[in-house]
Amino acid sequence: MTLAKIVYGSLTGNTEEIADIICEAFENLDLEVTIDECTQVDATEFNNADICVIAAYTYDEGTIPDEMLDLYEDLQELDLSGKVFGVCGSGDTFYEHYATAVDSFEEAFLTAGAQKGSEKIKIDLAADEEDVKQLQTFASQLVAAFQSI
Ligand SMILES: Cc1cc2nc3c(=O)[nH]c(=O)nc-3n(C[C@H](O)[C@H](O)[C@H](O)COP(=O)(O)O)c2cc1C
View 1 (cartoon, rainbow, N blue to C red):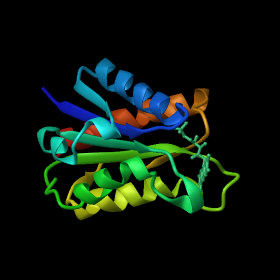
View 2 (cartoon, rainbow, N blue to C red):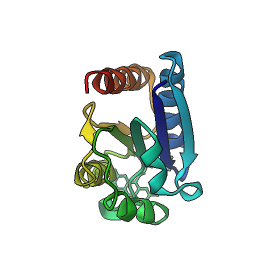
View 3 (cartoon, rainbow, N blue to C red):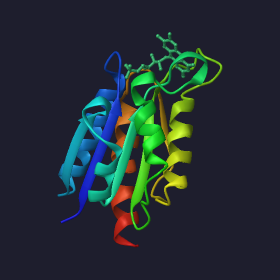
View 4 (cartoon, protein in one colour):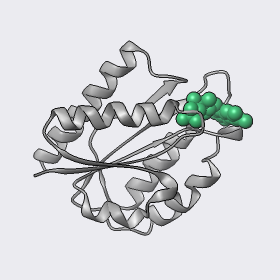
């Protein structure tokens, strides 16, 4: 069975909801899924997954939230070759550095040797109906990418 792991950081709930949408999409595709808030989990747990997802919101001046920094650092030390990753998260287009934490986590996964399974998704504040569809497609693409490895 294909195992997917989702780790998210969320202050006001938007990114948590995004992570939940992806979780449900994976479950509908018959994957075994774990979903964890970033402070409750160690990056090394991605070693046990086939598909690795990080959902992150962006904080001041486009930075990674403090509570996600350990995850960000540790991720880059892993060898995730043979695994597929996807990144997504919420930001606010009001800010100059829109949802740039998503870009940082993409770089971290690439450093860890994981294979990008879908284009990253940035969502303006809370996910709307269109975003939900996009997130479901994101989940399907990750599964298809893993199956074709
Ligand atoms: C103090 C502060 C700084 C922020 N800075 C940024 C930023 O630089 N870029 C961005 O895209 N969003 C920024 N945001 C917006 C949040 O990323 C956005 O509200 C997001 O939906 C929060 O996700 P969450 O509900 O999962 O916590 C900032 C929000 C706050 C409160």
